[in-house]
Figure 1 (cartoon, rainbow, N blue to C red):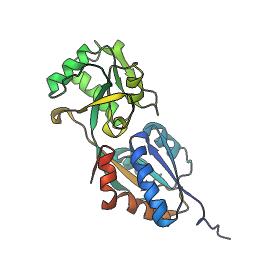
Figure 2: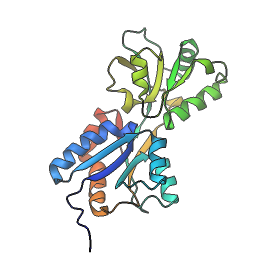
Figure 3: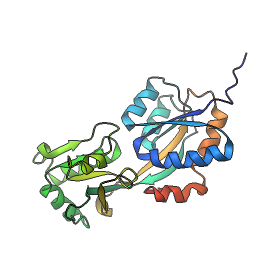
Length: 234
């Protein structure tokens, strides 16, 4: 006997970088479709691990590279992956702190060298920042001043609490964080844009509804919401 899943909510797991955008887009989708959607937002590494461990979800929203790896390992429905939005890395300070120049690569490097503490997250933005520090040859020298935010903890919250003087993270995670000031995106010469994508989990038993939800996430109707939350429509 088949099980009727029409009244069950779609279950979505996502990285923290997309949680604000997903919340807004999901509200519009639920209103238009009547389909309930339940979202769990965690660190990207944890999200991928939970999918790899076989935890049941209908939709996965992660950096596109992470989704490609999951698809290669059979955890994602082949061909279901759709790009949702692009996000860039930005820099933040605590509100009221003196302005730092980040208008060029040399200015960012100088700001890093003069900061008491540097904060970054796990995931694509953190990997990029570590790579920059190594490229500049200062990773070892400033290692005692580096703070890696625990998975699921926004770097912006550490900045707001005064635990981190200079914070680096996806703009989408910094833009609405209270108590901080976003200085801007990293300059183009040292920027790293991450494409976030959505796909149907191989464990989903609501693949039709999941496909409809993915179409909504990638619809031009949601472009203004993505921009509002610091992401670029694709």
